[in-house]
Amino acid sequence: MMKHLIPHERIENRIYLLRGQKVMLSLHLAELYEVEPRALVQAVKRNMERFPDDFMFQLTNEETINLKSQIVISSWGGSRRANPYAFTEQGIAMLSAVLKSPRAINVSIEIIRTFVKLRQLLTSNKELGKKLALLEKKYDHQFKVVFDAIRQIMDQPISKNRKIEFLNS
Image (cartoon, rainbow, N blue to C red; front, top):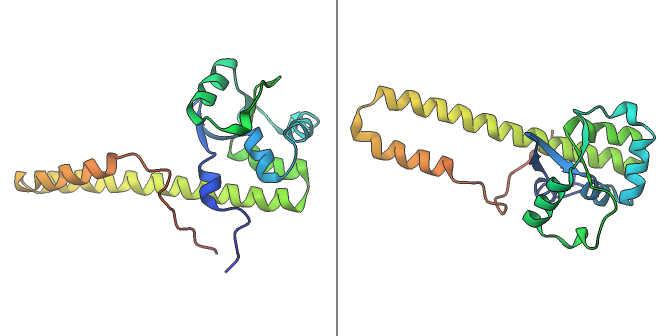
């Protein structure tokens, strides 16, 4: 069993939903890749043709302020000249080609695996909801309490402390 380069929880905690997309910020990616944030951004700017709008975008001032207030972390300390960039799953995959280091390749693989696992969790939860709806239609009202309890559990937000098991192929 291969030891993970980065704990998946560390990656999961750095995935945000911005503009309707799951993204990771340039400053967090630089931390994971063990490069300076400015070096990451410079590498991207030298290869802008590899990063269309659906791979990467720069946060607006409002988005940056809102995100800073939500996540309150020290790595954002001080004033920044430019707003961070947000990278989609495809943008993160492209980063490994731009940064070209063995660590960048391995970190990108771990990040992509985490995105895939999160997508699988969402899909399985939707499928469970559909099956539950079918069961509700099939059975009479005596089971309504049970179905309501199950729905209440499904609707609870996932705790940041909740661990997700990852299997190596």
